[in-house]
Image (cartoon, rainbow, N blue to C red; front, side, top):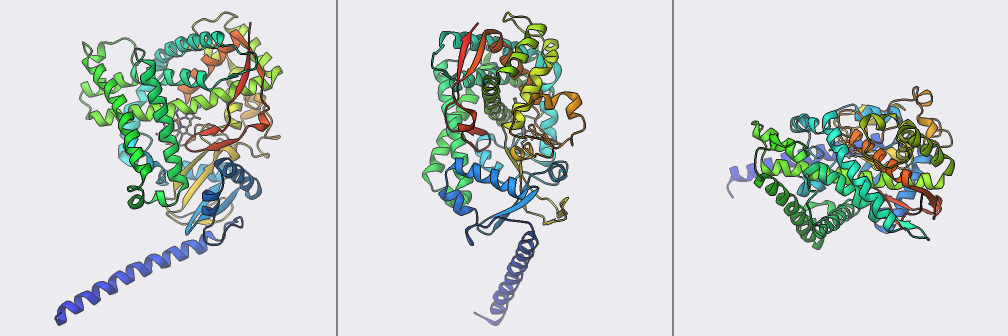
Length: 491
Ligand code: HEM
């Protein structure tokens, strides 16, 4: 090696050391800044990673609830060397959600193989374009079309429940899953002609996809792409994604093969809206369309399943509240099952309070995350460095006793306008808030109201299991780990 070459190597080595040194110094500085934030005592090196590996998902869910209670409004946990800041109060959460510089975390990257960079997973300019493109699919006129689907599917749900009445109670998951998947499937793609067997496979694949992502979130090694790629789980994920994509591709292709322009169809689905935009010159590839359809299904299916399940369970366990809802339905709609109008839905105000209270106690999306895009100071004076992972625990925010007295009690009156108008706007956020709030909020409310109304016109709901015995866990959606049973008494 000649003199100049040696000099070059040493200079390179020196510059690299400087860069690494600077990074380590910044990491140390950030760690010291974050150490100011209160934190539970955990395993010294592993931190919460120890709990992630060792404990069941139900146990972890319970542990986080305890931490939120003990450390409200803010606490820090660590996973090996990574510090995570947990927020449990309205002011701090507003600070994060209303600032677009705080971006989504890499947990959303785990979804990219399946959902590409669609509305949920994209950011910046691409997200803005997509949000604008999809907004017409959720406007009042489209919702009126979607209501036709909700009405049809409610009739089928009531029919199925009637055929399968069970003295010892019905495990409602099969029925609710079927209802919500059909609602979102038909409104997204107009798939009313689909075969049940194909749908069943699709449902199984969706479920497995959720489990795979949970495993990636839980297992620190699986978070590292260069290790994950070589695992059996990654291999299985590829297979599941292939099936999910094949399903959506087939539907898009079949729709395109139908005669005539999509603009001429009367009852439109989200797919029609996107194809219409393409016909009118918007630059949308087949993959772009598929990723939005898949996102719609992913976000619209299990969130509403959980909400409807918990609404029925809470009503079964609170007979006097169920009676009041039934009285309202009789006054607004009558006793006989029939298609509802949007005006009738609007007038079912007490039912809406029950849905809101259900989503307060059991928000389908229990936690959302962001990466701090810039350094900022929390309401209680702690500095949060740029790049910090932030978890916002909607579940615990909704159980803040200073905002919701007797927080564990099911009390829909909290949402009557006279009781809720003075609350901080970020103290109740089941659909999130700020620019990245849920685009499907109205869709979900209309669907839930239609189903609950049809069911209560036909059945009295009685409890089978005690609510306090239910165990929960969460991945992208809140879930129960045991079946939810209700006794349906036909009237
Ligand atoms: C009870 C039902 C629902 C709940 C509780 C819910 C909740 C949420 C929450 C909390 C977010 C923010 C996620 C985050 O920031 O990480 C979100 C986003 C989103 N939701 Fe929903 N959702 C529901 C139903 C639906 C439905 C029915 C659809 C579509 C049909 C839908 C589509 C979306 C989409 C596309 C986003 C991403 C929006 C964006 O980033 O611009 N959701 N939802």
